[in-house]
Length: 250
Image 1 (tube, rainbow, N blue to C red):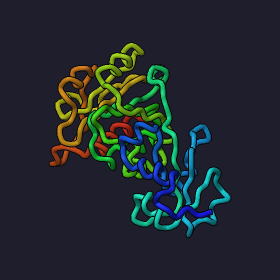
Image 2 (image 1 turned 45 degrees about the horizontal axis):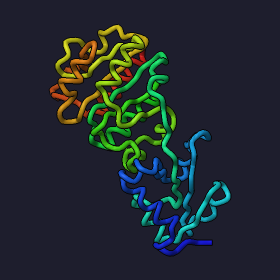
Image 3 (image 1 turned 60 degrees about the vertical axis):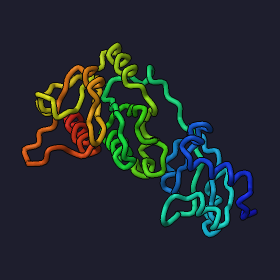
Image 4 (image 1 turned 180 degrees about the horizontal axis):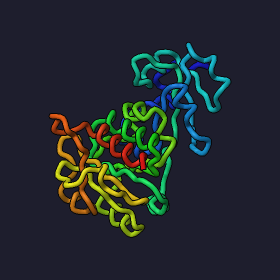
């Protein structure tokens, strides 16, 4: 059976997930593309998979599938060249207290506004072995289509906690003996000269304004990246990636 009507109840409910408010209420989000869907671990709940009529030959590889007309599928898709398959996936719930008991690196993001930056940082955190990424309130949605595409599937490889209150999470980290560093041009030390703790967290700030003074004051130490050239500052995702690379070298 192929759904063709925009009044179909399943389609109408799915279409609402393009709105962040509805994603938050229902606790579901879209994952688009065959490769991305195949990245979803087995312990994540896939509520529904939609396949376009033109790509219905892939139906046999997935469960809970619904076939949509090209017109309906294109209304759900947010890409210029749809791959003909997308899934509705339940958001994963994580316990912050349990996560920060682990040993390793944690990334704290404050007020990141660009979905491409957020997705790239999550991808780098995955690549360089971070234990989790904490994304503050007032940051871009980690479940937006642009953010998810930028993660290239890494959203499923490590815990990413959304809408975190930084003034609450940092004291919890300090109780677990996690050293908290803030990345800022105000830093007196370069990251490659600092002997880092085995349990540490790095705060990366907003693309335009950096870390707020309130958050900076919560850090144990402020560090910066050595930039011998003429550039005054780095893109947030590039800065975060360099920091994670430096830590991974040790």
